[in-house]
Amino acid sequence: MRWWKVLGLAAFAGVAATGVVVVRAERRRRAYTPEEVRDRLRARLAEAGESSDASASVS
Image 1 (cartoon, one colour):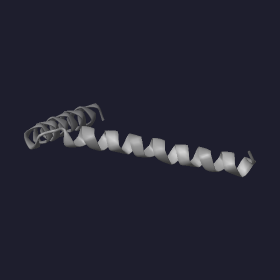
Image 2 (cartoon, helix red, strand yellow):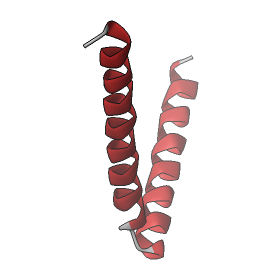
Image 3 (cartoon, rainbow, N blue to C red):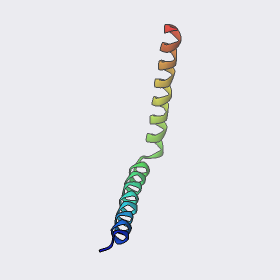
């Protein structure tokens, strides 16, 4: 095999692997119900508020 064929096969394998990762992430993201997403966002907002309060009191 010539080097360009090996390079082409490696590129094809890389694109396929990237596609698999993207599909898995999309499945994981779509698995949440709207209520779960809302709850997670509220928890993150509360956590961000706590950390900004803590940093403000330290400064």
